[in-house]
Structures are given as C-alpha cells and as structure tokens.
Image 1 (tube, rainbow, N blue to C red):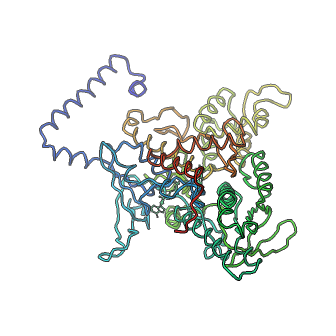
Image 2 (image 1 turned 30 degrees about the vertical axis):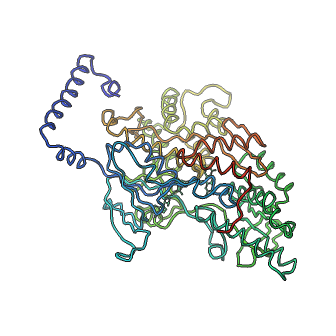
Image 3 (image 1 turned 135 degrees about the horizontal axis):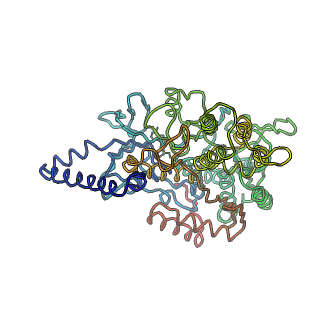
Length: 570
Ligand code: FAD
C-alpha cells in the first residue's frame, strides 16, 4: 500500500516519508506513555467510530466475524439472539434435524479477543439517516418498563435485516398458510404435520374426511417449496407409514407453481430431473397455476392454460413464493427518496443511495444495475473531451478495460450474449476495423446488456459474501487513506477506495428426497443423484457456523439413519 501511495516519489523521499511516519508513531507512543491507562482507553474509545449493525442473519454475522473491532465501537440490534442456518430449515419441518442444531447464539459468534461487541435483543423500528440514529424496541415485555424503547447513534450503519415473506396480497394467505422463513415457522410446520395425522385417524371419520386431513399443499416451486415437498414425502414414506399404517395410502402432496416448471431458476436439466422424480414419487406438481385465495378449508387456483378456477380442499398449506421488503426498510426508503423502488438500492460498494455512511447487505437490498449503466455512459461521455460523439479505438479500449474491472458482470454479458453488437461497433459492415467508435452506438449496445443483467439472487451465499466484502472494506479504511485515488485509478468520474463487490457463484443445491439431490456447479456443471446428495451432506456440514452445530447436525443425520425421525408432537 505504501509503495502504491507514494508512487512517483523518488526513493530517498520515500525513505524520508516512511521515517517521518514511523517517527510520528514513536512520538505519539512516548506521549501516550505519560497518560494513565484509563485515559488511554478513554481516548481510544472516543476516537473509535460507532458502527451499528441491524440483524443477526447471514450477511451481518459474516460481517461481524471478520470485522477488526479494535478500530470500531460495534453494537448489534436484532430481535433474534441467534444465527440460524436457513438452508437446513426444511429439514427441521419433519425432524430430520432438530431446530437447536442449526442455531448458534449470536453472543458466541461475536465474542472477540480484541474487544467487545454489544448485542441488544430488539427490533429496529426506525432508521433516521438525517440524524444518524436508529430507534429500537426490545422484543421482550418487561413488567418494569414494558417493551423498552431506545435510540442508538451511529457513524456507520449496516442494514442487514433480511426480507419478509411475500404474499402478493393474496386473500387468506396471512391467516391460513404456514411460512418457512424462520426457525419458529419450521417448528410450527412440524407440529401441524403431526396434527394432521392424529386428526386423520380419529374414529368415525369418512374416508373423504381422512383424505382431506392428509392433503398437504405447497405453494411455490422454488428451492424451498421443492425441498419441503421432498422432506415431507420422505417423512411419510420412511417413518409415518410405520406409525399410521391405516391412513398411509390417503396422503397427498400437491405442489403449485405459477411458472411452467419447478426450480425454474436452475438449469433446465435439473428442473426436468426434479419433475420426473416427483412424478415417480407421486407428488402432484401443478404448474401454470395461480393461487387466487386461501381459506381454512380450500385453496382456490386459476389454471392459466384453460382459465378455469379450481378449489382444492386441504389440511395445511405452506406458502413459499419469495420475499419482499420489511416495513422498517420501506419507511427508510421513503425518507431517502427511494420510495418508488421495490427493494433498497445500493451501489456496487454496497452503500445505500441517497444517504451517507449507510450500507445494506443481504436480502434487504439490491445493487442498482440501472445506475451502473448510467455511470458507464457518464465515463464515456467524460472521455469525449472534444464532444465529437466518438472516441479513437485506443481511447475506447483503454476505457473499456477500466469499465470491465469495475463492472465485471458487464464484461461477462458483453462477452457472451452481446458479443455481436460489440463486434459490430468495432468493425464496419465490411468487417474492417473502425478507427473511431461511436459513443451512442456503444451505449445502445449497453442498454441491451442492461435488460439482460439480473439482480443477484436473494441467497445466503450472496449475503455472506457481501458481509465478508464489507468487513474487509471497514478493516482497510485507514490504509485506504494513503491511497485516496483507490486501488485502481479509474478514469472519468469514479474514484473509490476499494474495488467494487464481486459475487462469486459457488453453485447451488436442490435436495430432492430419497437420498438424491441436484446441483448446479460453477462452469455450467450439473450433477444429480445419490453422489450429489453426499456432496450436499459434506458441504452443508462444512458450512456450519461452529463446531458445536456441525457436530449436532451430523449426529442428527446419523440418528435419523439409525432410528428414523422423531414423530412426537411437542
Ligand atoms: P437473514 O438471514 O434473514 O437475517 C435477517 C436478520 O435481521 C435476522 O437476524 C432478523 O431477526 C433480523 N431483523 C429482522 N427485522 C429486524 C429489525 N427490524 N431490526 C433488526 N433486525 C431485524 N440460501 C442459500 O444460499 N442456499 C440455500 O440452500 C438456502 N436455503 C434456504 C432455505 C429456506 C427455508 C430459506 C427461508 C432461505 C434459504 N436461503 C438459502 C436464503 C437465505 O436464507 C437468505 O438469502 C439469507 O438468510 C439472507 O441473509 P440476510 O442476512 O440478508 O437475512
């Protein structure tokens, strides 16, 4: 860093600067020796910047784990005093793993050798970006003070509150459906599934009543809905059949999906493998159906192909159709001029647009791709100093190299989907290399890329990588003061201390039940079957947040192999 910072200085002046810097350090050291330890500590704390982190999920814990807290005074606010390993939530619904095996107390995670992070079990009710304050309310009712309300000041705020379930305002969903978002949801589902079996074997019921009592409906054919359907199917066929043999043939699992295929964000080979497996397992997959409403007895759906409305009697419905913005974030968006957006927008450095020193990571935010395109357009316009509307090939090449470093995802799209339009820009219709590049032509090629660029998925993988990226930026903040022009000298308008966030996709899994899973791995690799399920076991065991949860999860899997799942309704 020093080398870069003093690039351009002669070697002797570099030695002088380093000498002065270290001398300064020695001087301040000897000066501070004269202070009492208490004063020293006080001084250190006084100059530490206050960081408030909202949430104890994937994004915030990966931020907190790597943050150098000797530089910051950190406070964490969340209504949950634990971290939950969400990818194993579907396994909790049927008792394949126990709820306590996938959670780790947040105080274990934030315990650090070089200082203390304070944790408040409370929810943030309001973010006041203008006054750099967050307002919080304790989630525990106390007879003394009720639900205690308090405010915290911050220098930097990290919003990592995740998202909430999206019902799309469908009537009856909030009242009559189960969700699979939190640990409590999974525990509730586990109890309700067992209730359905106990209800179905009560005396004097007709066969039709027993059949309805055992009709499980899952709305949403994404990874969570599919994984829950697979778990439920395994639970019924491996454990329940032995305990409730009289009703085993009446069980029905229906998966409703509005798109044409389940797992439609995955490679088509995976979605067709999943559909074939579910067909063999007897799980009904109703694709192309939209849910119009849910009551305590029925799910009303519209079949898109025929326009027909159908009512489906059910015993329980699990709603898993995606996520939306939490009210506290929505209110914050209104304050900072993002009220018209659906999701809180950040730039590629994860800074919230429209306010200062607020960062947002994980499911609560999205990187604004449209703004990236505008920024790139501005970089090209700034380079066109004589306003001729064109750049020489050399100028163009130099700028595009910089743009591709700053915005790697643009590079990927330019190279794959829109190579033709860029080739057209560089060559004339006869195929001869152009001497000058038309800026507007390039911008219109970019707009095609823009429509192809999608937001990052709302996954734990993205959230964790963003948390790690942000903590490394925080840790290097002081070093960055030596290189104010940033690690790369970007041309035109943009100069930043750090490289932008880059997401590295490490692959995604879809467990499909019966010890089979599908995986989409980097490099367009698709793997399905039993070996993939073992890969899933090993990766999910290794990704556990602590050795304690790792041991608990592996022992739950072993217990399930030997004794089956526990079907007590507690
Ligand atoms: P979260 O992990 O949801 O954390 C949000 C935190 O904010 C929580 O601690 C919450 O209590 C807190 N909070 C909420 N409101 C407030 C408030 N007002 N004030 C303060 N704190 C607040 N992703 C994958 O990559 N792979 C998978 O296999 C996978 N499987 C999944 C399975 C299920 C069933 C679910 C529900 C999700 C799954 N995901 C998976 C997605 C993944 O869980 C999310 O993308 C990830 O949790 C997002 O992390 P986050 O930190 O943004 O939010």
